[in-house]
Figure 1 (cartoon, rainbow, N blue to C red):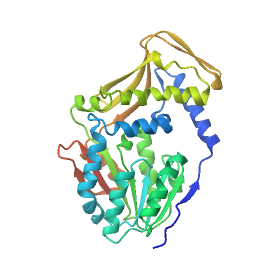
Figure 2: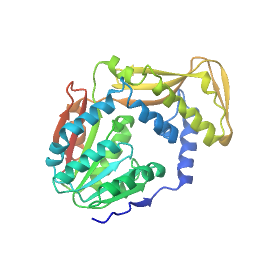
Figure 3: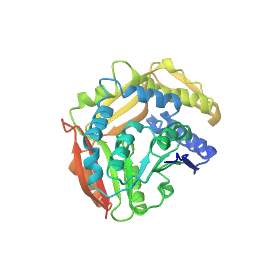
Figure 4: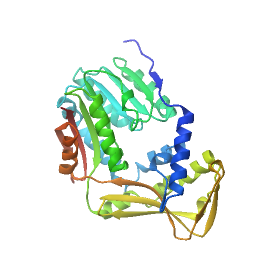
Length: 325
């Protein structure tokens, strides 16, 4: 079979990304408490650190999801009728391959499209997939899938996959927006595959976000490098420490960087001078953990019926297949 080249479509302007970064940082650093949205951690170095985190013994999420897909990909695919896999994000290549192999085994593999705001991530992963799955139309769309679901390729038998526990990194309003937007785009009978971390003992969760090797801390502190580079700021990385806590009300783990001393930070590109007091927290991200029944009910409220649930051995992580109704 003749090898096909991946097809790319760019739907976001780099200047728009910079404007969004500036808006988020200006709003976040002027808030009380101060915060920076988690999505800005994901530069090239941030992606490399996150990939390294997946191999740490405390970070159970990557192992649990990969194990579930390895065990149940055939059953997941057989539960639906999808032929085109739409991947929201492009960092889970190993897990994607297992799903593509399962579709191939069912003789239903027709296409794969990854949607990611980082074009370099797409360009690094898609050529190999195009080579290894020549029967499929392989492509990538540079877009913000949270806000640009209208860019999802059209089709009749699509499976939209959101893996890696990413759904828990969105606020409640963002989760609602995403589900409502996806339901508008998907036709009845089309599917969504979700990987979600589940509520469990807080100690296990906290260790995953504060590993002994300090990989999560380096990932978290990398946001200061991003701000220094893109906004001409002068954050001193050594003057902040990584901190995590469990919020039992929100059922989420929350990350922050704690100032080790009083300081003034100049964010030149925004013409901002930002004061930090010793012990002050700069909130940098959170990850909500879900109850399976509550998660299924939320999807049902937005037009998705449950088609299957696959849980790991300790019921601590789940894959959920939903169908648009």
